[in-house]
Image (cartoon, rainbow, N blue to C red; front, side, top):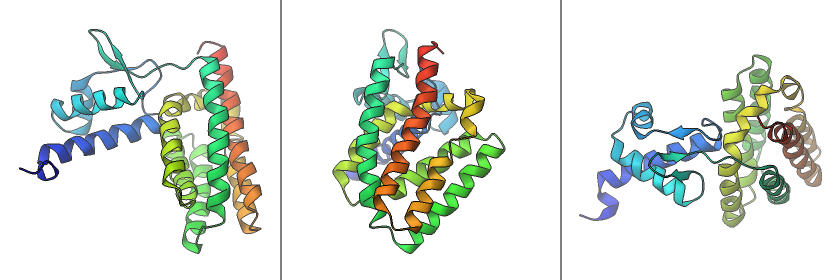
Length: 220
């Protein structure tokens, strides 16, 4: 049988994609151990495709192997986090500026709707919906840049940043400012100000990063 036609291969790819997305949006916390049977139950699949997906993610650095204990979500040190933050600002700022110049009318409307959705999620304290809408917002903008290489690099960085992102909502002050940069971005788009869009994205990453950095320094 052609591997592309193998149902098990298709299921493994689907499980991998779902787990990758869960890591990116912060469903799992730093240091959390992922048990194959629990993940399989959450996904409604067998353990074999989950085991294969977890090992694939470990090979990419999204997870770490723990001797005799399966895999876990890695923890970032302050220096590692600072490096990640600076690299994200550099790459995502570039993607945002390029993407802003290429967005069509439908994409601009989608970004505006997602900005509103994020504000509503923050108002009701719904971290899960905020993070999901935030991911969709940035995906639309960055993919509009038309650079598969740039997008691939950003996507890899998101895997490293995702697990700590949920900790934003452990800081009460964060919710009051997290959507400010998105609102500034929408205004910059209305002015056709691509450089302003870049600055808004850099602000978004930097502001969120300061809350997360403080939690790392506090040992949370």
